[in-house]
Amino acid sequence: MRLGLIGLGRIGAFHAQTLTDLQQVGSLVVADAVPAVTAEVAARLGAEAADSPEKLLASGVDGVLIAAATEAHPALLRAAVDAGLPVFCEKPLAAGLADARATADAVRGAPVQIGYPRRFDPGFLAVRGAVAAGELGRVHTVRSTTLDPAPPPRAYLAGSGGLFRDCTVHDLDAVRWVTGQEILEVYATGADRGDPVFGELGDVDAAALLLTMADGSIGVISDSRYNARGYDVRLEVHGAADSAAAGLDDGLPIRPLGPGALAPAGPAHAFFMDRLASAFRAELAAFTELVAGTRPSPCTVDDALAVAVAAEAATVSLREHRPVRTDEIG
View 1 (spheres, rainbow, N blue to C red):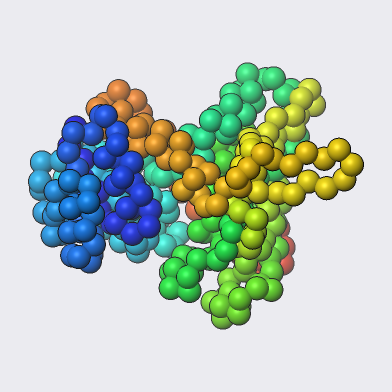
View 2 (view 1 turned 60 degrees about the vertical axis):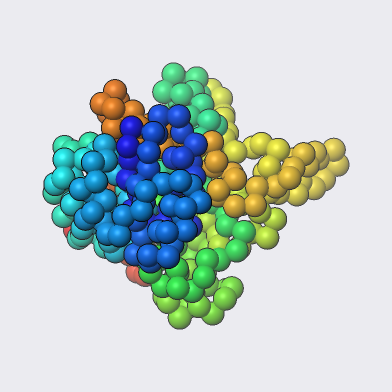
């Protein structure tokens, strides 16, 4: 098939390489706001270059992927849907919740997949399968962890929407998706004890969230921008009959201590692109199936909207120092 990719920054360039390597993709058309970047990626990967999103959408592609800056997502998503194309859009739907709601309303029912790669990680898939099969019995606690090796650049942080909207959304989506339960309430705390940029931007560099799920189970999320040992993404699910975990592989960036403690074989995962490499590939392969019409969206705009609401609840909770129900968020 012939696919288009808009946005060739860090994740966009990574997706371009992945798409080029997929057998299902016969040709790729790329576009970026910076013409030199478009030309470089097109030349390196043997892709076609388009000098604007409009020309890319009119170039005869079968589907389009959006990896542009967050503020561009709503307009590009609507334009691609209006062009009758299946769309993969990186999270989030929009920078703000009001725009996210409006965008979801505008494209609901169209073949749209939102980028949440943990849904395609083999460990996360296996844990979800175990929960769905009842192997863990009554689930009482879910723990999700995301620890970055180092903070992103200031320019990225300034437009990210904050830790909850940029990073924690992956944990919120994973907890909701693995358990099959909606998030009813969020209680969040955070700290900005690292680079002064976080305080200057009204952001935090470490946070913990306590979730109450629809069935009464508890979710616990721990995130940080500082984990010098590497990129740490884990999930634990504890039930009355058994417990299961994802992310406890040889690349786990942690140093076990105590008698008989065995360290992971290593090397430690350095960044999300190596920790989730297979997940990203499976995610984009799933999009080719959506384009082909052989599967429904594995992550819908309503999934993304539910996560956006929970992230907003976390933001309000942090600011007001109280639990916030998701149905409070207008």
